[in-house]
Every structure is written in structure tokens, then in C-alpha cells.
Image (cartoon, rainbow, N blue to C red; front, top):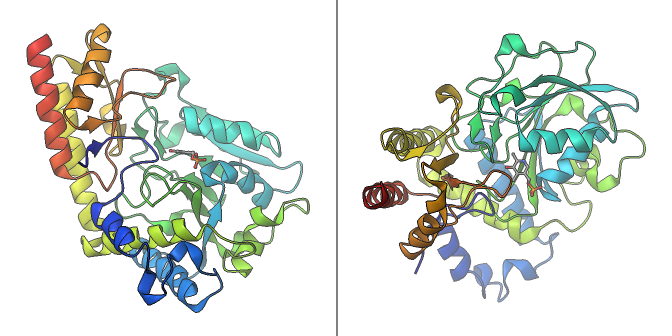
Length: 359
Ligand SMILES: *Cc1c(COP(=O)(O)O)cnc(C)c1O
């Protein structure tokens, strides 16, 4: 039996994608093999790779002046790849600190560049995002890095920062493809796949062409965006199965009406869940309303001693992986694209019933 899986990542995938992958597992398109068993340089696989890129470009309306890369090492490899590719040794970069993932990105960047913390929301315990006017930007920075959606804190920027002429770099791991996006505002976007794209291990990078070719000479080739772009992300054997699944997910998004339709659905899903939390008198969400995440909804019970019972009963009801991140505790419902509205209804019904019985 399939459950409603609220995992933050690796996260639920759309059922039609899993069904197609299952149906094609032993005999992929008449090859007598699975897609995992064919050469990445074969005509068949190249077609899969090119179609996935074309579909992603269409979904996000990615301008032709951007390269799309399918890389390995997840989002965390990009924490290092970004400074290596965009900064000469000794350069400076601005980082906006909104919590866990921006801090992880900064910690890695400090190995390669001088990091200026352009803003920091520690004073609100990372329940807000800085306003544009609060960003202390350095006009000489090589780039500005931020995390549009903090997956653990459940905090999301309601705006895209204006950085003047300095390239804006975004870790969109947990919010990419959740709604339309103005790609042209960014110098570089990266995302680990395991939230809204496909299997873990894969990362998608969307980079403006004029930013290629600045890599430090000691950059490892497989982290070098220019080398990867020049080889069609096939400098070495790419993660072929992940790329194939990502392609099926992009197809599914198109068949669901594209990102405008998906965005409307996600907005409604999140609104329903936040309203249930706010109106309950039993659950609470600490994040400022204007920057609540559409994808990751942390919440606490008024009586934390009930957490274990809540999680056990939810699991028995087919609602799984609702425990908050180990760093913060409490609960978190991750409601990415693949979570249907029916999953939100089931969760709200369960939460209402649990509150009634324990309130
Ligand atoms: C999940 C996540 C990461 C880490 O991704 P890995 O693929 O495990 O490296 C980084 N940033 C954000 C915002 C995430 O949600």
C-alpha cells in the first residue's frame, strides 16, 4: 500500500512516474535492457538526456543564454563548485544566512573565498527573511548566494533579491519547479534532485553562459561548469537513472499543466495546512506569515510530550515521515509537487482528530 510520504528528502515521487519506471524496468523501449544498463553515449540515452533538458527549459522558460547541467554530488557538491567556478583565489562573496542550509553553503565556501555575511536572521531564530533594504551587499563581491527556501526552518523568500550587477546564486533544492520562476534574475541556480526533481545524488545547475570560464585553475574537472557544459554533462559517466527519472518528472509536470498550474495547486495545499495549524489552538508554526514555505511546513504540538504518540498514530494512519529535522525537533510536513491535495486533506483530518482527542 502506498502511504502519504511527508519526507523532506529523498521525497515522494509522482505515482505515474514510478509506474512508468516500473513498466520500463526490464525492457526499456524495446531494448531488452533497463535504462540503467545502456551506454550513456548510446543514441537512446542521449535522446533521454536531451528531452529532459528540453522539457526543463520549457517548464522554467530558461533563456537560451543559460546552460543546463546534470551533475553529481547533490546540492552539497555545488556548495564547493560555486566558489571554485565564480571566484578567483582571494575574492569575496556575499552570503545571506537564513538558517541551516545557507550555513552549510557558507561553511564550504569559506574554504575557498572570503565570505561576507550580507544578512543574518539569527535574532528571529530564523523565522523571517531579511528585507531587501537589510542586505549589506558588497559591490565588489564575485556573487551573492542565498537559499530561497530553507527546508528545515520552513522559511521562504517572498521576493528575489536585487543585487545590482552582481550575479545572484540560489540554492533552490527544495523549491525549484514549485511555481513559475524568473530565471533571468539569476546568474546561477542549483538544486539537489531529491525534493522536486528525482532521485538523490543528481543536481541540476542552470548557469548564465557569461559566468563560465572563470573557474580557478585548481578546480576539479567534474566540478568545472565550463568543462561539464562543453561535454553535455558527460565528462564522465553521468547518473543515468536519475537523469531518466528527472525526465519523467518533467514530463509529468507538463502533463499536469506546467508550473502555473502546479504553483496554484501548491499555494492552495500550503494555505490549507497553515490554516489548519493556525486555527487549531493545538498546533503552531513559528514562521512569519509572509515568508512561510509552500514546501516545508514545520509545526509543534502545544504539549511536546505528545510528539511520540502523534508520530506513531500518524504512521499507522498512512501518514509517514512527519518528524521534524533532528536539529529542531517537533513536526515537519514536506509537501512537494508530488504530494496530492488528498494527502493534505488526510493530514488535516488526522491532526484535527488527534487534537480533539488530546486537547
Ligand atoms: C536537501 C538540501 C540540500 C542538500 O542536498 P544534498 O543533495 O544532500 O547535498 C542543500 N540545500 C537545500 C536547500 C536542501 O533542501
